[in-house]
Length: 213
Ligand code: PCA
Image (cartoon, rainbow, N blue to C red; front, side):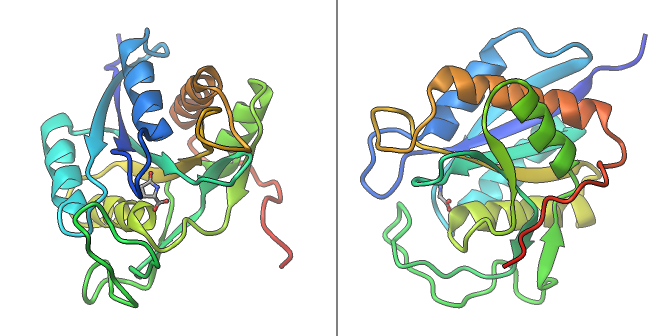
């Protein structure tokens, strides 16, 4: 018998005055369900905080020692599941985090590389999610707020401290939060499909999923 792959999912607390964060609901629901065969799925909720999200993520990675880390967050206004390609070394947002902190053009990690690419099979994941009936695409930017921050830190941990495949998926609003939206059941289907694709795909698909402009 081969060892189970440990999958760490992370979601975020609500932020910017919202009552809920779909990423929190979705990762907890997936971790409570039957895991996809060959995997063990754990979920952790991270604070929407420049100062504390990185330490919370590092602590979760040290405790769970995942083979695969799929961090998730809300991208309000996006209609599809966004499988993120790249994390950049920039904190810069017009809204405050949950500590009331603003950052403008600050590095996520001083002296770190300008960017990290996801080491998840992003195109296979987007395809598997679509095959499960949920709209999904590869996204070329995770923004420059806390989601990009955690995505960058996840990649940095994978490069410097704990060998794992790591990436980020943005989720739309839930139906009671705004439009466009997807129901929680679709978010759960999508994250389970992402786990299966990451489990089964060593080398990503050579299909176009970029943006012309
Ligand atoms: N979305 C925000 C931060 C937390 C979340 O769920 C973002 O996209 O940066």
